[in-house]
Length: 210
Image (tube, rainbow, N blue to C red):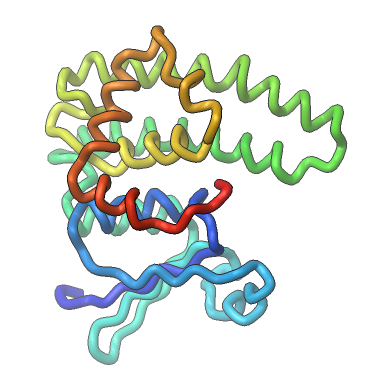
């Protein structure tokens, strides 16, 4: 699909679609960013492969492919646009650390959907006091080892954008995440934030709560 056209469908917020948007932006590849209100979801749901969002529609002439599942989409476009690592080994490292970030994202979802306030607090405490410190130390060690300011020696990949998104959507907790024990994570965050294409996107993207 060399001359493919891409349409990304998601709700009017960042969360699971933002890493995919970042990949398109970092690669300088055009795509249609279709954001819809949650009330409009029934109109789109039947078009999604799994009835979930985000989903990506890829068109090339008479051929159309639809992909669901945010991480599958991210991996696909990252491979397409050379943001998945320069070797099989780098790609494996990228995937491995991306799975850790997915664990953090899934914990955020559990907190969001939990109705019981006591359980919600337990899940928040688990994220803040257990999962984040453990994962961020692993991120810190890996970025330090790569010596590039990113997860792998060859430079920017989609896992860097994924970690940036996780930090970015934490809003007022960003400073807590980027503490003095995370100087390499902080450097990666700044590297992504100041990437010219990402910086341009951050200036024009819609303001959303998360």
